[in-house]
Length: 608
Image (cartoon, rainbow, N blue to C red; front, side, top):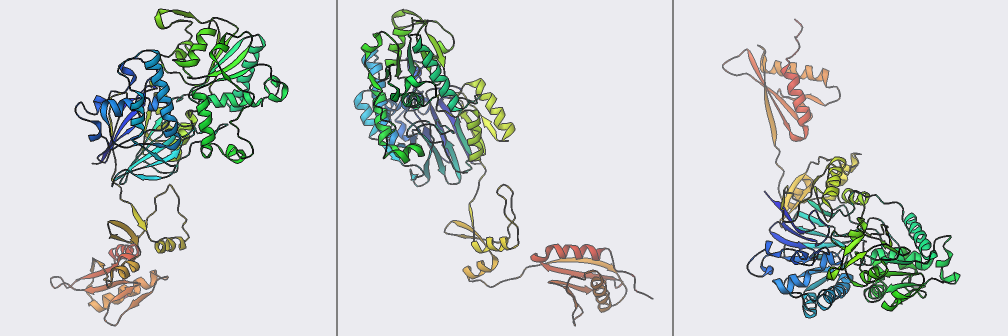
């Protein structure tokens, strides 16, 4: 019995360290290779010893797929390929290939240069790792080997994010990575065709959330910023990745909300707005470079106006954090676990006039998660205690699908089963029940290290000839997508491919003469007359009943009804009993069965 096995090494009932092993039709694929932002010890990377404790991983994996450039999906890649040992292909999209090494190098600098960690990958290892990358285009079917093929679909979320279909023969798995089913100011909505995979592996970060409209969120965001700067406070907006950063920044930079005129560059901007240099600046550069990945509006207006060029937004310098008066700063990373956003937070946390806005999900263990949970005294490095007096606000600009979006994708792809990853256990349980009850699809949510085995039904694809389809359509029966339809035809196998064609076409293609197969049934009648008289009685009886059919009495004494032949015979052992032999072709199966049942009831009494 064919089966698909799935084992999360990370993101199983957890957010962070995405890494999922999939075994499909004898092929082993690793989906994502991320780090966990909530840990600074060995737990931050997946436990690759699960795959093998001896030898290089190349011998056990056919390929690795990276869905997008966020560190919780690619942060362990150099460690995996260069330190543990993997020389096989690593597939990702072109934007991911461009941005991924920048984030990895920034991650390495924070861990090694600033925190002094040992046993960490080097800059050269990042370069060597990226040499193994094979970049793919959207909707391009890539043949990994003779049997394994992959295909990328647009996922929204961040620049270059993709969902991947993994296919071996008739078995297939779709892995979403992170995705967004709602278009935003810079990217379009995720899309996948009705591919009907055996299994859909989907993220479930916001498994119980249904967001309000984007315009309401933008208005609330700008209102809170406005109130803070009016009282002389500073605003730190922590931009998770680059997606939520742009969603929050663009309306602020363009001043599109009525009543917040001080934000508009046309209204003599008085409050400085800064963005953190480095990663954000490079991200801006790549958004300009990969315009085809953005939404339709940006692609249409790009030649006249590049929406990622802001004349009134300034680069942030660390010294500016101590400047008096209000200001707005967008800084990365979004979970306040390191970098410039954490430095600014430490400086401004003690003033109740200031505010920090968290626009995305924060992993447990990070500073962002702690302050969102209500913690106001934080133990920082060197056992220093930081008292948080500033306002803490959470506003969901996260580019993940909400519960409605996840249900929408499942309905769109029509998988046989669903497996949830990248979410919290309680929220996943709620979504699991919703999927099973409303969509009637079996759903799984394994923990890290737990294997789910899914038996798959063997399906053989069969092509149908155009002539056969036209003949069915001529009968006036329109096909329904979700309703099974019975087709009569001849199954032909040629070059290992199956086709269903009409019997006439099959005979012509194969150069064969037609042989007719007839079914015969015996009906016993009590009748002392001769065989010819019995046959005549049968003819008269059927002629009186079957007025819409052609009933004939042939010279040899037999009776025909359409293609059905009826003959009377007398067995030698019992002259008072006659046997009617009723035979028909498969085309007249229904009429043959009806006549057999009718004759079994006997013939009417002849007048004396």
